[in-house]
Image (cartoon, rainbow, N blue to C red; front, side, top):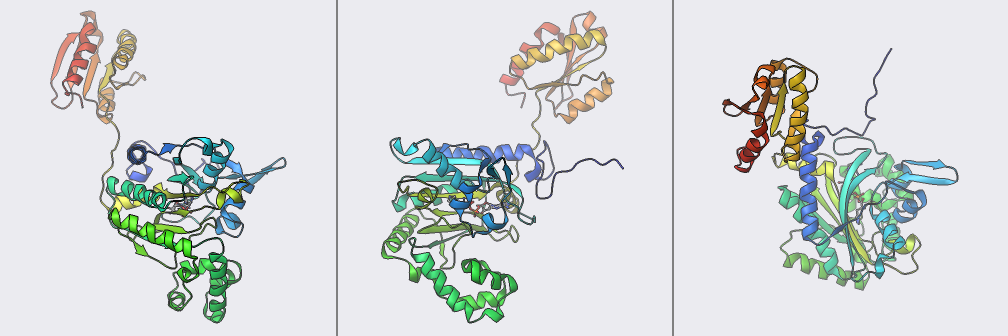
Length: 433
Ligand code: HAM
């Protein structure tokens, strides 16, 4: 039996004029424009890195024991090299920073990005195998104002696009010694209740106990109330950094909640960690997350440490939040002019007229399949054309064409050689929208 191919599970196409915004290309273009405008205003510069990266970069950068590296990588071998479809952009950005010696440029690197990422997760609402991240990273700055600015640019994007009801949670993870110490204490505490834990949490207890902090199971959440808290294991300098960050956020009137259980699912963080959530977008409620990662550059081979902080956000989840906020996004873009031609001579002249209109800056369409006048008018309607120019054999013999303003239905005859100027003047007078 013949079958056609479909997108693979956890991926989707983005089409012109689709009914749902997240599947509609015009909506993506508008949202991407909005994101880039805010990034630009915060003086971030765009970086584009390849989708393919060496597996070792991601494994060393994000951490072997993380879910992303141990279970969710799309990786494959070619010859003696192992490649991965990037699951995130921070490790690739740091790789590019080191590779191109961006530290030698004056000042900090303020880089932003937007592009597809890949994780072999179980697909569900808000969770895909190919998804899109936008984000920003500041490399080369230790000061807590950089942490604050990253949070500010992230918040500004949601605010300006019209998303309401976000919830910012922050925490400090301390230095490289704090987390192992905490991990041990948490493990010891949870061991006492091992029998009460779910099978998944029991498995995590030995391998990656910090992941249990994300549990949604009610009795586990209750058990965690009495568990050791990460802030009690944090070194003095990290604590001071955290206090300063909170001060900057207060100064900028950013509302946040402190969450001593927030640890994030990537191993590269030290000090600041944060997550932005939205209660109304389903089980996958994290819109964005990030933090400071002063040790990542060294983990992937840099001889000098590079202090850095950043955030990344899921574009598909931003669409869910826009929908929850009732924000309407643009649909198909109308054309200015649709040229309709009847008969071979008219079709020949129509071809030149279409190109002349485009040279004059008019968005112009036509259909070259020789359909009936009625069918061509229907296409003009579907393209939401402001004007239709009709070239019929009879009119052409007298050098005239018909122009119809679609909004009013008013139709007039005009000489062929004045059409472009006429339409242009209409556009300049904002008659063509
Ligand atoms: P992350 O929390 O793994 O952090 O991902 C950031 C965001 O990407 C999430 O909050 C979520 O919105 C989106 N996301 C992740 N996985 C999926 C998926 N399977 N489907 C849809 N959306 C998804 C990072 O990736 C870090 N690189 C963030 C960062 C930047 N830290 C420092 N700088």
